[in-house]
Length: 212
Image 1 (cartoon, rainbow, N blue to C red):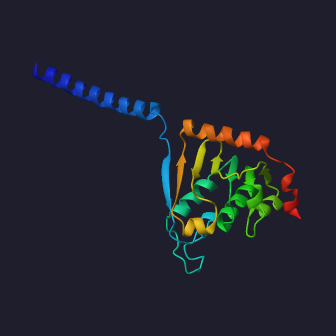
Image 2: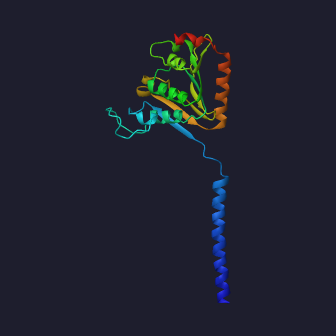
Image 3: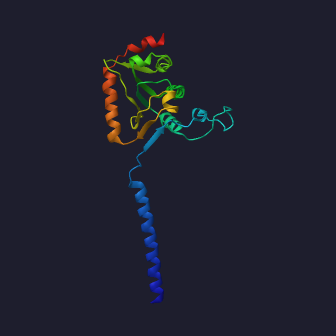
């Protein structure tokens, strides 16, 4: 009887162990993927971001800025550079050289890029819109009696980057600003629709003079 009891207990332990393993396996298989929700605040700490653009050793850049420091700006660049298929950018002011470099890097990798810009602000000194256009990136100017004041990007049709931040050096380093980054479909989809609505309404030939 004692031996039979021991066998039963042993089998019970094994069954319980297997049940736990099956439960854990099912949990990891069936649970929904974690949705990304991230908030970034500015001004951002100034640091070197060279490592984000190329695989380099920590000592390959000799600039005086701190290296390999995670900041709000480096996080923004990482999310932007994560694009693998498409980037739709709707931006009022765009003069930040590192953000321009990121968009150009995506273009060189074959990512499909569409940029929607405010007509008036795109031609001011320092604007990177003409640079993007000359690189062959599709750019359209918003047509209307009011400014196109949006500041958002949709990465791969599923990641939204939006907030108060203009893509300028002053906004990144000096202004109190915010950015929200999310995969939430209920938030991403309205921005996709808004981009498409403005894209259709905007002037496809307006940007040709930026190449001159």
